Image (tube, rainbow, N blue to C red):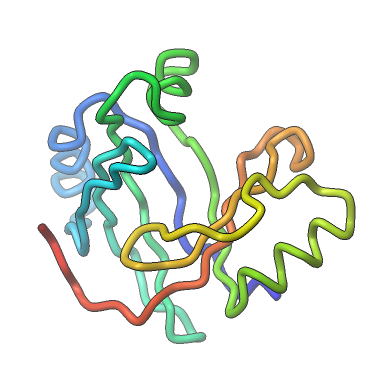
Length: 146
């Protein structure tokens, strides 16, 4: 089942300025960055720490690349701030099916490719006490800042 907090997703208007804030204020460095065209975001993963299950915990900073993306719409409505929480799991397929069986809406029929080659799905916030929740099975990672 769920093994850790994989990351906290934070929506922002200016990725570079937000990265600089976290670097200057807390000393966090970019571990990985990419543009996800399917989701319409430019993102930076800031590694916080390693975890006992071989994974890590991150802050994921998300800047929309287009206004009609999910993050773009969310940012227009809510402003900058926490967008979602993601829990790590060894098997996103099995865990999402188990959670679906408990009456929680899983937003993707099949998990999709997420940051750093991970496999992801989301749970509906109305079924999770107002919190958009992501399930993540991490791919083996190395720092790949682009």
